Image (tube, rainbow, N blue to C red):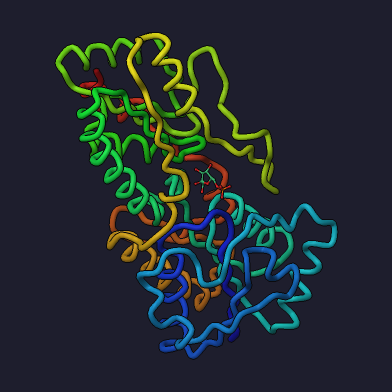
Length: 342
Ligand code: F6P
């Protein structure tokens, strides 16, 4: 059997570990051949392929990014998108396609499998950890590690200058990275998209922190919003799945804090540093296991499924179900962190 593999959407530490797991088990145990498609759905749309065999996956386990390349190409936006993908798969004699991606990439895989008879198996990826069907997505742990290290470093410089330091982390609809790194790094305020924040309350926390001669660290997710405001957009542009580009809420917040409290405030936007570089041990472990279980699903002919982590087990869930519900931060979990605010 010949199996296609693609990685789509924003990249994420651990993608290469999945690819390696799929290919190693597929070749060694099942005698399958593989072909890689470049840059997400662009590969099968345009017939752009890359050889994928055991030598091609040697040494990639600790490497960030994806050896297959990625893009946010949406094939469903083109009238001839489905036909072109089917033609490429037929030409390449691909009998099953492993799609590694977030809600957008997997959403396309769900429709291809369910409505158009293209046999897909999905692997969930996103540093945002916001896919409901899985306890964790790989990439998240690495992103939290990067953000926590940044917060640790910012504490000492904030204290030297007695300034407010605002750290903007990724998280469009879900505040998982903000919450986990904020708790791990001892932030004094954590702001997430799920709960609109009151700027007066934020300033009160900041002032109380200064009273005990400590400089506050504020962690804010890029999608967080004040009570009476909207998401801060980068420049109004959107990607091909229609998502607006975010970033800027950290700058806005620092300015508000300066104006309202008279304290100096600066912002650090961690941006793509959270997505780049070597994956953590946990992400390599999870991504490798996802890869091994995805190729097992292909062998079983269990198409239209996504592998997911439940506890320490890897299970299979319907792709359609897996991509419809966002996993957001439970208010109870967020409330737990409140004891450290101010
Ligand atoms: O993968 C999701 C994400 O990390 C979001 O948190 C963020 O808004 C987005 O990617 C930014 O991605 P890009 O800069 O690649 O469009």
